[in-house]
Amino acid sequence: MTGRTRTTKGAARRDPVKNRERILGAALAEFSRHGLGGARVDRIAARARANKRMLYYYFGSKDDLFLAVLEASYAQIRSAERALDLEHLDPRAALERLVEFTWEYLLAHPEFTALLNSENLHKGRHVARSRRVRELHSPLVEMLRGILKRGAQRGLFRRGVDPAQLYISIAGEGYFYLSNRYTLSRIFGRDLMTKAALATRARHNRRMILDAVRR
Image 1 (cartoon, rainbow, N blue to C red):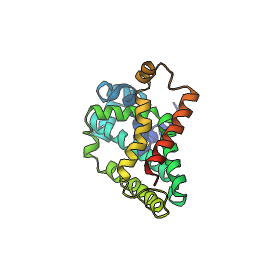
Image 2 (image 1 turned 120 degrees about the horizontal axis):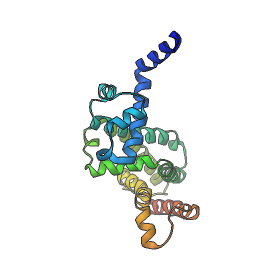
Image 3 (image 1 turned 90 degrees about the vertical axis):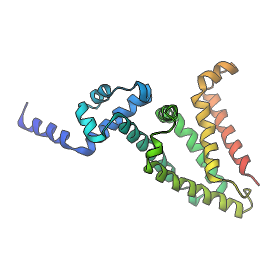
Image 4 (image 1 turned 180 degrees about the horizontal axis):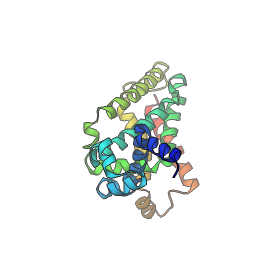
């Protein structure tokens, strides 16, 4: 090994930002596959090309690492929502775009659904102690509140719709479908994950939400 190679590897190990990113990526894969209960710190360390002591140095404990992964995952979807620039769209177009985006995001990121399933098994105890998660959701609720207000002022939406309840419905339309796709496919005797079935569900989601707020 040359001196330059040793220096490069040593610099990589000393880069806290890259170290954290590597660990978070490895932890996301582990937690989404095995849940919090089944995840193993040694597997996370191996995937991150780190050691367990480094994980504990950056994150403190397995539970704290799980919370960090949750926070990073919530931050990612909230950032993607902000990039939609919904405030400058027609209220109906804005709401329809948010419904479409939420469905498409859940389809593209099954690991996010898996994390939420695991956290709900633990009764939300990690999210409960996270101020960051609450702060991430406040702008989302205010954005929806603004869309609903503009729609009501133009006579498009009924008044009095709770933006938090509306978002729960938007997310729930996709989350329940995807989380229960195996049992629902067996119960109704149809493959809910075919291209045609997913397109049908996307249309259904849009109609359900837009009809719910229509004046």
